[in-house]
Amino acid sequence: MRTTYRFLRAHVLQRLIPRSRLAFNPRRPVEIVGYLSMAVGVGESARLCAGALSEAGRAISLSDVSTHPDEKSFPGWTSSRLSTEPPGSRIWHLNPPMLPRAILKKGVGNFTRTFNIGYFAWELEVVPAEWRNAMHYMNAVFVPSEFTRRAIAPLTKAPVLVVPHPVIEAPATEGMRERFGIEKDAFLVSFIFSAGSSINRKNPQAVIEAFRIFAAEAPSAFLLMKASGDVNKDEALSALVASVAGDARIRIVTDRLSNADINGLIRSSDAYLSLHRSEGFGLTVAEAIMQGTPVVSTAWSGTADFCDPRNSWLVPTPLIPVVDTHPEFAGLEGAVWADPSPEAAAAHLSDIFRAPELARGKAEKARDFLRHHLADNSYERALQTLAAMQSS
Image 1 (cartoon, rainbow, N blue to C red):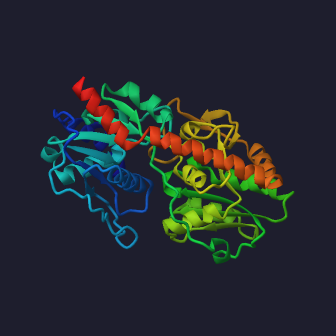
Image 2 (image 1 turned 90 degrees about the horizontal axis):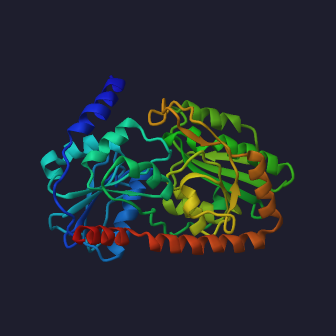
Image 3 (image 1 turned 30 degrees about the horizontal axis):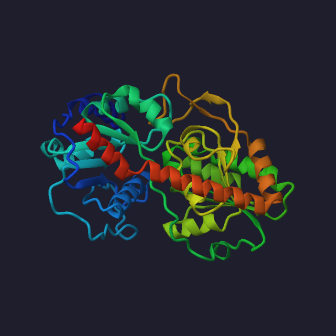
């Protein structure tokens, strides 16, 4: 039944949703719709958007369409700028498979009474049919990277604008090394990932392999990976945890941590290692850069907008066919993603280990570059661009 529903949603429901005929009105409030009370990437995307637009002085309202709300972790937005006036536009921080349910929940008639902007974070160069079918009812599309823009733009006549996630140097919990029993002088490598968004795409097994190669020459090295997911229900995550059992220098944490705890873990690390096969943006990579941590990253996809050889340690990679059971990626004909070299990543870790002061200086360049990139491509600038398009 689940397979049947997915087919109907992709090929019937997506085609039935009407497109609003309203123009963008820059003087009306913007409503942010998303999984605002869920600890998932699209939820964080919506929360970052709300914070950035409120900070820019834009009148906003919020609509939480969470399927599994966690009100203890995300108690809601408390900005004094929340508007009670009906919105003139909405930014939907939901990928197309999530949209029909959310649109029906709010009402199709309500949907057509605003200018609708989809925030779509796709991770490959080939776009699934469901995503293509969803393009017809969005008045504009925001995407987190130039990589995603190149994939999405040919599929719609609507404006497609690059608006990266507005990452900030967020508060970080002190004492995270002590909390996890990591020695003060250990060379700490970290990686944060969600198993639910395709563990193959996040590629933590390559991180483990690269670390083990590097650790052979660095006795003080320690790898701490924070994974979101349920080990008891996710076979792939369970197998990953089992693969490091008995290794005293590798730990995979699946406990719920606050954002400040995760930032504290990253900030206390000597290197952040992401060997992703593909990213629409690379939120945790950007968060590591903002915390001033040297970053070793795959040299492909969304992270290429802000990671280059001058500020990061890039891992060259061939592209290989996508093989994955995740419903978003399964059966995508012609799709490819990266296969980064653990040996090359290990060599970069060695460079950082041997010259920590030089590494921190390079990491500071990455933070400066990312700040400028985010300022040049902000939500506020994107909305101003839409307004200028409307008036021309």
